[in-house]
Length: 204
Image (cartoon, rainbow, N blue to C red; front, side, top):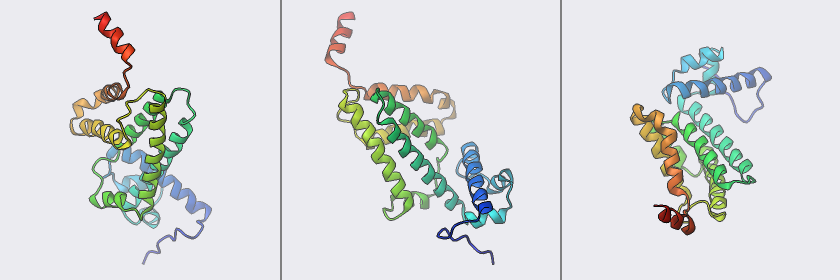
């Protein structure tokens, strides 16, 4: 019987290198092939055996969960780094673009994974919640500087960005228009000042 790795025990240096290499390769392969990416292909490209892969990640879902958690943590850290930007609207747009591109790789997550995302007792939920809070601060800052409509909240942002990704995923012909669609969304979220509107009307 194969012994499973105990996450509470420090890993040997070689085991830690294998763990990190598997995750690095898995991120690239999932980006190419989606959530049903071949585990055998991941192991081959990481130059490890299937037994090594399974010792670190007993199931596909365990691997996807760790990739998602790392992605959420990275996005939370990026949001924090953008909070001091002199251009709050551009900081928000940059962060949302990063979110959109990252979400594209994880279309079609298994139902059990979605359940994990909604379970407040899981590490994945905690990472997702931290990311959303960090994004909310970027949104509030952009609104406070008069760049984004005050009636927009974090749920609106995530729904709109997810919709752009979903459209591109369902209709590959629209994939090349993803950035354009994103720009249209940001234009719609922007707060239009009365003075600007009056000037536009006069010009018309």
